Amino acid sequence: MSSRLNLHRTGKQFRAVLNKYILTMFEENYPENLKKVLLIKCELFNNKQQKIAVLGSNWKEVLRNYVDADQLPAVYGGSMTDPDGNPLCKTMLRYGGIVPKSYYFITISRGSSYQLDYEVLFPNCVLRWQFASEGSDIGFGLFLKTKGNETKKVEAMQEILPTERYNSHLVPEDGSYTCEESGIYVVRFDNTYSVLHSKKVSFTVDVLLPEGHTGKQS
Image (tube, rainbow, N blue to C red; front, side):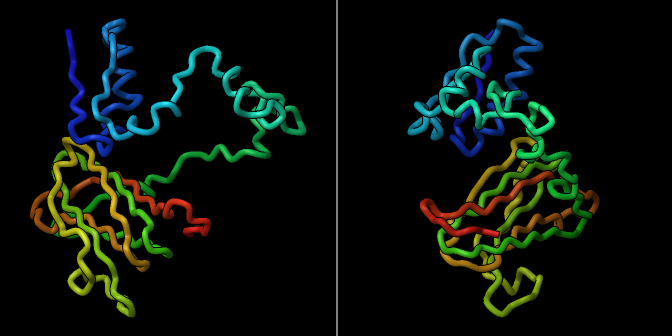
């Protein structure tokens, strides 16, 4: 049996298609059936192939080639521990925890929309987003608040990307926009066209600094 992973949408859909869940599915359900994965014209591999290494059981040893042992937690093969001997070094590293669902998952009522404001402090920052809906499509658009305008109505904002309906229940959407000017950018999920159904949407949005910029984006 052969399976084809459609990467026609290049790097934008790479993370959504070829991720740990796909590989886990092959390993668990089709053992020894995944002979080779071929990536053709994938943007990620044009200039970063030499920077990627797939490590095996000797991964701790390889890590020590790049990180001094006294700067690497013992759990990862180094010699650094907490004062109480904890190899995880929890007093020095933030392992995080469960992210509140409200940070990445929303329910948009029928006939309504949901807006998120992101302040871009420097020109040429990149606003990057990923989103997926459950069961049906969802509208998405990007707007810029004009100076001195505090309204939440998109009709009074500058339209950056017109609102369009995306079948993100079939393929997660992944896109970006280079912000030519600073300001408040508004990401809008639109469900105003639906008279019967609410929509559940999971999403991430990041503001990335221009390459070589040393400032901080808060």
